[in-house]
Image: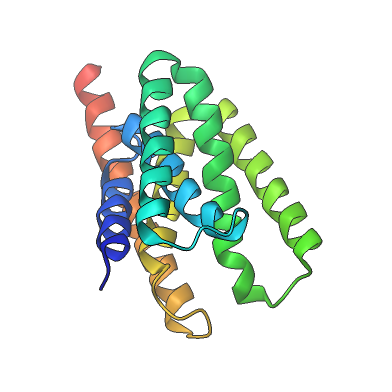
Length: 174
């Protein structure tokens, strides 16, 4: 188990249970995960240390944006989460050409962006849950039937936990 494994697990758990409440963690985590994932895919970065440094810089940038420009940060996080979840789920549906893969990932990102604008709290709950689940399921072999099952179970668990916490908070404020 390398350092990236533990970073992914911790970020995944934080996003599963606290993505809406601590949206800045969600935005920072999406910057980190996007930097780590796409750093390998797009820029061909190979060394884990280089990936961790680049991903950490993007994560910190995400947190700073989240703290000072909340609306923009939520839109960016929505786009990144939508694209990451789409990218993570594509292997389940088969192989696609690189061009089609990036088009589908772009569409997933746009859907995430639109959801983030229209339904801020519910989008944060949904996207942080499914993204946290995808991050945790990342280390399960893609050809295993267990990967989609774990992703679904963790997604539902995250949505339920965050919804309960959100509704309790709303009830206290009334």
